[in-house]
Amino acid sequence: VLTDSTYFPCNQSLVKCHGHPYMTNPQLSIQYSCNPYYYQAFRRVVHQKGESFTSLQEGYKAWREKAMKFGFGRRLGVDIADEGSGSIPLVDRFNRVYKNNWNYSNIYSLSIGQGEMGVTLLQMANQACIIANRGYYYTPHL
Image (cartoon, rainbow, N blue to C red; front, side, top):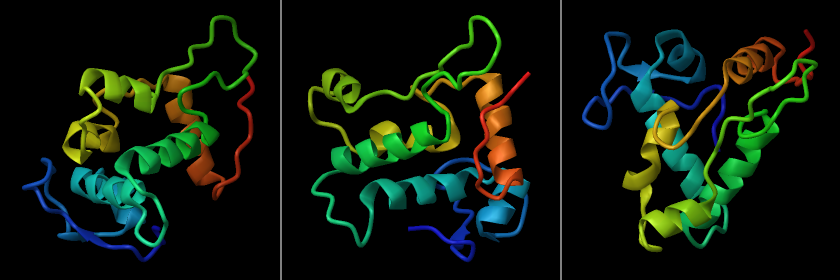
């Protein structure tokens, strides 16, 4: 769905951002922390152009499963006491809150790490390590 050469414009009418080149790809989006890039990337992922998702809910479930594989929404299994798990809401939560009538405008804040998503500092550090390790995941060890 996204590649190294997937460019999106920094469209600040979607979400606010700050000064940087107008077009961003994944590398530039990280460098400049471009919120509009993540808004558009998340929208593409949950709508899965080219996939056969029948609903936003189905696309969100698939995104949630992938996010959890990167260590979000669960304990990482490190050797420290009381490790937090963070949270990535289930579809059931949105169905309950929005009475089974929700759309992208109700969840886009997740694209920039806000809204109902909760992550721990260790999970964020682990995410940076996954990027530095070119996609390889190693369980953190302290």
